[in-house]
Amino acid sequence: MKIGLFIPCYVDAVFPEVGIATYRLLKHLNLDVTYPINQTCCGQPMANAGFEKQAVGLAERFEDKFRDFDYVVAPSVSCTAFVKLNYPRLLKGRHECVTSEKIMDVVEFLHDIVKIDMPLGSFPHKVSLHNSCHGVRELGLSSPSEMHVEKFNKIKDLLELVDGITVVEPERSDECCGFGGMFSVEEKSISAQMGKEKVERHIATGAEYVTGPDCSCLMHMAGVADKQQLEMKFKHVVEILASGL
Image: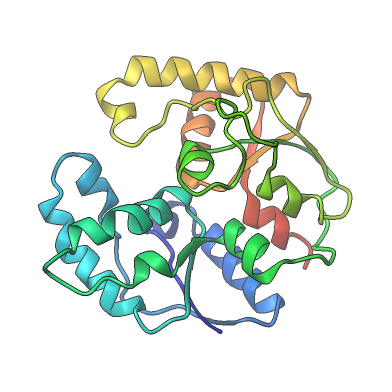
């Protein structure tokens, strides 16, 4: 299978190590992965801010870049969810839409398609797991607490393949951290308080690190922790999976 690696713009600009770790991990698993050059933003920031028309051109470009791959894999649950759920509507009557059916978050891809069952790297630390809202409720990476369903967590399943790691979850394990894209700008006081409470719950687990599948949530919590002088380190789940390979 041919895999197109999509690295969202904010990951490329702020967390390039996450993009590199994703590529390294996929190559380590002997997968046929390609990073198409000149890829750009998927259009999520414009659409979330109320300017959907400005996202259409980016969606069309995305389709042209990734249409020929069997899977499109990204280390970002929010961008993945945007393409999967919104492209069919944005591109209806304008452009053929095929990537919405091919795109997967890297956790979902490794868990459901590759079905990894072998040891992955080493990370001898206690880690608190952050379940991002898009991952829980739009991509199904873990079970939502408000639903009466059997509990599952694909992120935790993968992390437990890493040697030496101890994985814990905070109280209110799938409650929002307060980022929410434009929400953190338009309602910054509420966003900051939500972030502070979330970080404090992660700290209460006794973990050294907070990890999760979305850099935007980790970025928000890291900023809150730094401003509040709270001791905690943050690392994307793919960085941990690729650690020591």
